[in-house]
Amino acid sequence: MRPSVILFSFLCSLLVVNAFFYIDNSRQLQSLQTILPAQQRLVKRYGLTDLALSSEARYTRHPAVTDPMAPYMDHPGAIEHFPSGSFVLPLTKAGR
Image 1 (tube, helix red, strand yellow):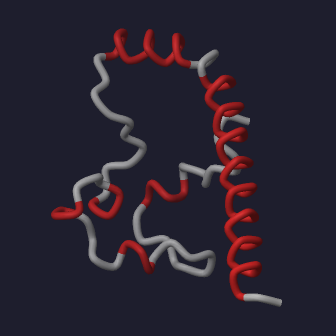
Image 2: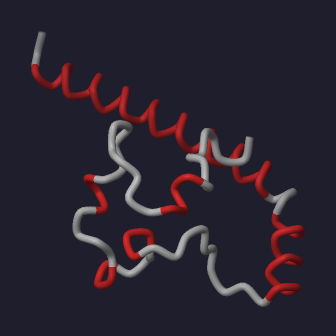
Image 3: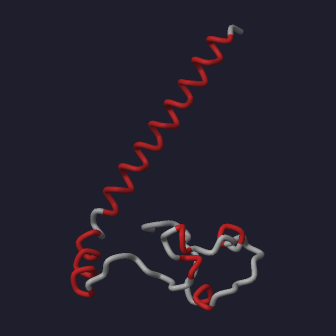
């Protein structure tokens, strides 16, 4: 088999995967559009600027103030160092 045929079939398979991701993303965006008005009302009512689920240093958004060990503390066998981890469950699937 010629290398160009292998490359062409690989690129075609990548194109199919890309099309699947595009279609799936479009479907998820349509389902999230139904939730958006309720979220906008919530933001206006409470004056929220950002989603804040936790106040510990390792969960803040800016990399300059996060804990350097944060990426290594989130594996399944890690000991929970901060109390908010016992109140917030991990997400299973977004929007479902």
